Image (tube, rainbow, N blue to C red; front, side, top):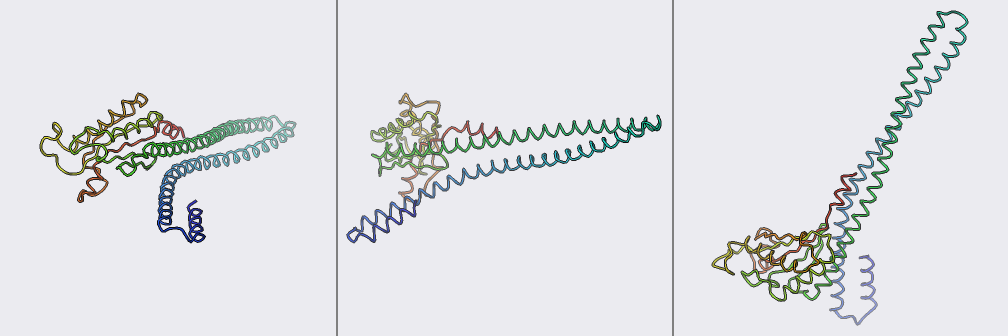
Length: 321
């Protein structure tokens, strides 16, 4: 896809002499964005491929066990045929010797009984091996079916999270350039809002524009009830001094209060399942950038809404394999 886009850009550039430098630069920027998104999709696909490869390794092991049992079964079949042939030979000998003497007859009868006992034992062993072989084949077929179901379920979850990200980006487009971003990582969707959009310094009261953004997020979440929703509050490393906002002990306290304020707004939407909401304060201990610059401090002061698909069904499928 990127190669096709690149070719398209090149054709446009070569076939048009009046394209402005700004348009050309915009096309280059869009191309770079597409490359980044392609790399991200490749990373996600690699993680899923690891899971798939592991399951395929397990399937290969089951196939190897099946092949070994089948080989043992073939050997028993051959042994059974040889014993059966020997029995028939002795039976013929028995018929010939029956006329000669009772002693020879008794010996042959005992020998025949011994061979019959051996033959019966081999038949039982063969039946047991055949049963094991049938069970292993059934297990292999069931595992292959569950692997296919798991792959389909994971693909559906990935598509659902991609659609969720696109829906959020569309709903929050009005806040572009105001400290709000939406991105996807490791199968999760992150809505990050800088404090400049939400709070005054030292306060955990959400301002009007910030509340509007959170309400828009809540509208999307109300339509996706199968998500775990973690709201994390983050601060820079400036120490809390004085008596801010009625009393804040430290950055842990401030980040927790801010996360809880966001939870309260989301829970006002009756469509949002409150059991899926979790508020957490991370203080200054999960920075995005260094706190050595004003820009870094600004980026670190944020709220992150982390949306995770519930993986109970995937875990059950993995346990069943």
